[in-house]
Image 1 (tube, helix red, strand yellow):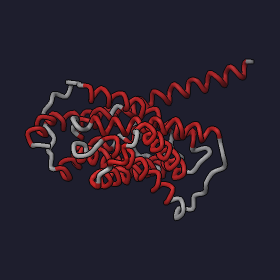
Image 2 (cartoon, one colour; image 1 turned 120 degrees about the vertical axis):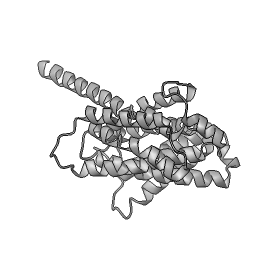
Image 3 (cartoon, helix red, strand yellow; image 1 turned 45 degrees about the vertical axis):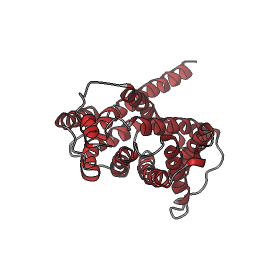
Image 4 (cartoon, helix red, strand yellow; image 1 turned 90 degrees about the vertical axis):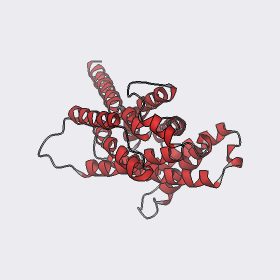
Length: 282
């Protein structure tokens, strides 16, 4: 991408939304809903197996709709997909692991710590200095998320919080790597590679981590298939949209993810309470 093009992307007005930005908003809503589904599935599965099953399903779905796209895959796409897949594996595995100990809404808000990390990594790795308004937007978005999360002073973070916090670095790296390769590779072929690499790494690490394959569960299969479809859509849209949306600008949009996760968690909690009350009254 030319310097003029990069400068143009970074200097676009924050509030101006195009098709790519609207698509990212859509997957952010979808993304926020995944936290509760993952936490539900963890009742029947370990984190590595579930991450592997989720992304293997997503890879298969993407291969089916690609109509032979893999026959034209290039070496650069293998490199790009593998590096992004490694970032997805680290981020999602640590985040899924952490969800065993903390509520889905808490996980989503802690995950938002990647918001200030993305412009820093973009500057260090891609040598693209974000525009001043982007820095201000990132700062305001992060402060808003901190206020919404309502952290309690003096309360030490537990295992779930720390695992989720560490995962944010990998998530930030994934977003930056997508921007790094977006204009040099085919979005569909790279998506297939990164989904497959994520699944392969997750299944491989089950051995040293001594995680066993869980017994068959329809709940687990349903969650994996549902999240497989969602993951395929999310990764495809991210790879396509970040061709024209800078990493920092995309992060400002992704900052809405924990809000949607909180909304979904709240609705699910209200529905659960309604069901329990109806059962007790019947």
